[in-house]
Image (tube, rainbow, N blue to C red):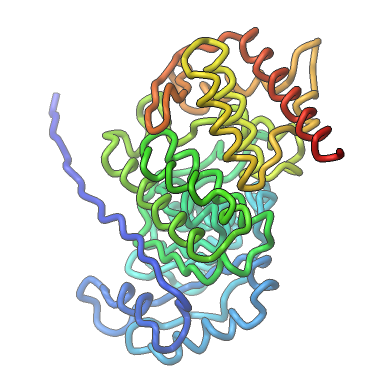
Length: 392
């Protein structure tokens, strides 16, 4: 047997800016200037989320103008390629093929760049296309939602849905860089802007008590999506997510634990049950609430602490119930199937992250079905009480 260790170091770059495609902003230009000793400018293929393009009708022209002005560093091989975004794009395999065709047609190589501009699902799609072409092309992610700027867009995972299951096909691939242009989050519809807030609360709960206290102090301002606290939230959330990826000892998830997915076993299933009418952020809020109340049921978390956290989640604008939770099969909520799907996705034994206190986490390898059902009923009751109070 021949056995050797192969140490590999990845640089995980996340930069924050405003107006990334303003002519005087050199953030992106300077990132692309690293051409590994090649002569001349690097080739760049830009992939643009259709929803982002429609919401920012001047963006495609700004991209063209930016690369014209900085053509000595990087050459745009074509106008930005506009593709559908949103969760539905991850269900359309033909979009992967279109990305591959564009990479082949424009002779994009491993010394070239793919820049993906869009929301989290769009970045998942484009990242998968870039990571599998030529065994990996340098990818620059430019997340445009609060959710992707503070969470998924700064990670190392790509994927598309298959067999009706979320992210069944995918890769782990560290992007060349992530550019968070904070101007994007201030032009989002309220519902989309709010989604990133819940992922910030999630990461604060499992690893950053000081951050949680900041979020708690500024809950009402965050509920109004005020600019300064939202930008602070994005920066700190991204830092926590990247720190976890870089320091957890398992960035490519070879083990069975995934602490950053606290609340997600239920969230992923709820999205599916609702045909994605419940957004990811809304589903995560409910999934976290279920797991927090479950922790109360099993004596892991004080009821008062859970109530405080649920109050913050509601203060920032989330409703902690969906009628899709009532969907059942053979007398049981379909939601419960999310546990086995979560275990299957990671492989090995079931590993669920729970919160015994703010800023702390533990892992459990089984969940009591009856306690989950009691948690759902407690959540239903809470939602009814709030609805009744709001009508009075």
